[in-house]
Amino acid sequence: MTNRRDAVREILVHSEGFRSAQDIYAQLRADGAKIGLTTVYRALQALADNGQVDMLRTDDGESVYRACATGTHHHHLVCRRCGRTVEVAGPAVERWAETVGAEHGFTAITHTVEVFGTCPSCTAIKSAG
Amino acid sequence: MTNRRDAVREILVHSEGFRSAQDIYAQLRADGAKIGLTTVYRALQALADNGQVDMLRTDDGESVYRACATGTHHHHLVCRRCGRTVEVAGPAVERWAETVGAEHGFTAITHTVEVFGTCPSCTAIKSAG
DNA sequence: CCGATTTTGACAACGGTTTTCATTTTAGCG
DNA sequence: CGCTAAAATGAAAACCGTTGTCAAAATCGG
Ligand SMILES: [Zn+2]
Ligand SMILES: [Zn+2]
Ligand SMILES: [Zn+2]
Ligand SMILES: [Zn+2]
Image (cartoon, rainbow over the protein chains, first blue to last red):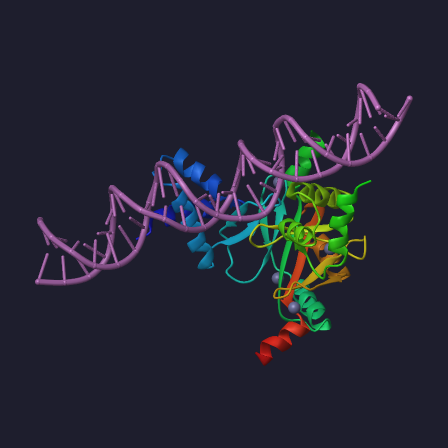
């Protein structure tokens, strides 16, 4: 039914890291797909609402999306050079967030955690270069 | 020298939580200050560059600023209802981020961590209402 | 005072995202 | 198959926070 949405998800499934809407749109067009930017945005929104993709915001305000392997709560270790992303679990962080919230009498605690670094390949390239 | 910048910083110093540029601009104008929005943006940029204020991005892409008490690395516990913000230290989180990065061979690890919740007053209001 | 330098702010431009709305596609039905 | 109702699509316009432009105003140095 949602042929276009599937196309968008396919792109994400085969991507190493987070991708932007415009980015995905460009690739689809390059692949010859007849699709509009609006539809890409709508597909990403729907996928994010369904919990089928994770969304986060870049430092410069762009929304980026990723089809993560696990549907359970997790965080990301992102290479700031090539974008390669690893999903990481962090029980320690989960506990810490709850604790620090409770200590100050806050309720309904949520949190955002992202870890950035330079991945092994990019580290190698950098030291070689 | 920077009268306008001081005015912007004053607003932040007397604010409980993070404030947006437009927000600060509106308050300054309401207080009768003659200042332009561009100048507010420039002041905030300068203050952020100086490390005198923390900046982060809202879920809806707005940049918000806060004059934090400590100049050292810390995170924030933010009331998602009234914006009241507490600065929190998290040695456990710092260690976790380093560890998880190292485990995957990533170098030059950085991280972003924010905790959200409903503050005591807002929790009271909510249960009363 | 006077010219050089910096700061300011009204306004336009920018870029990512959302809305609009007319057209196209699909679903349901006899 | 027709045929209509409902859903999906996408081009273009609107939106909104932010940044750039540039001439006027304030400040500085001498
Ligand atoms: Zn990399
Ligand atoms: Zn978590
Ligand atoms: Zn509150
Ligand atoms: Zn930290």
